[in-house]
Image (tube, rainbow, N blue to C red; front, side, top):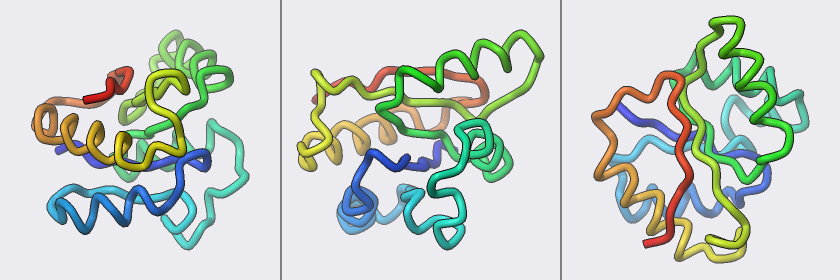
Length: 124
C-alpha cells in the first residue's frame, strides 16, 4: 500500500491536513517522523530510511535526488518510490492544492507497487 514521507520542503501541516481529511492515508512529515531524526541528513540516508519503512518520498528536490536514483538503479539498490513536485505546478504554499493532489494520487494508486517507481505529482 502507498504510504508517504513528506520531505523538509513540505510543511508538516500538509500531513496533518491529510490525516484529518482522510485518516486512512498513511502519511508522515520528515519533521516529526522518527522524532525528527532524519531532518538535515543526507538524501541517501533519507531514501534508505524511507525504503526500510516502505514510505514513498514526496519531494520538490529535483536537483539532488535524481542523480541518487540513477546511481541506485545502476547498482540495483531499491527504493520505496519517489514523487516529485514541480514548483511551477503546485507551489509549496498551496496547501489546498498539495492536499488535494496527494489525496487523489493515494485514492487512485494506493494498491500499486511503488518500489523503484518515480512519479510527478499533478495538480487536480
